[in-house]
Image (cartoon, rainbow, N blue to C red):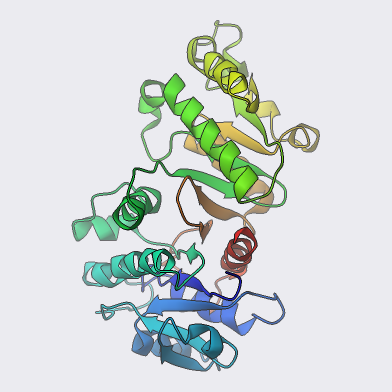
Length: 332
């Protein structure tokens, strides 16, 4: 499997994704990157490279030849849809088909054994929605694609990973006012089991330690500040323990992320999006990697957005994409 390359999607053509792929390839030797290919429009990628004055060989190729090409040029596999506009910093809904096709083709490549993992570049959901995209984000779309190619139903769990910290938001892109309605015992138990299973299988953590944050200040203060910890979170943790998962908590979120606390667990699971993402983006903003657990294939992504404001200026930092490619390689 290690000889099969990694599939990297183009992301939104107007964002920094394509140029980061070019920059990552330019530094492949110094970072010891595993072979990868970019699923995009070869003519568009060549134009981005020329606009940024990047002296990189780009070669249009097939998945079968991509690994051999990687050692002399950036392999670009045509994803099946041309980039219609692709003007850096100017997102256009006309480019949505090429963005989505790139993701679809990446998953298909893994399902066929033509790629060993998927690394997704940033997308702009607001642009995709204009073209009829129905999913809350990348994670949910990948769950549908997993069902399409592998059969069965998969619940994808988002984990943000860095050497310093790994976190899982148990609710993601929903209003804060809806969190207490969505945060059920079943959701917590299912999330915990998926996280524990994939930490063992993908990260080779023999006995994963899961720490759960409370929803309310001071983890509810014994019910004085809310009962979610008593009625939902603590019973779910007890159920996970009964199922053999090393789970602890709920802990006050404001004391979970200092150095001494982080040494006591392998991953922190948080009821809300920002409880999880604020600490990891504070500790490892450039190096954080988005990992999707619960799928039948490995998917990683840089932990940042499209950055339309700096796209095409040559100032974007490829570190997170580089870390995402390296992590995908290690996980497979």
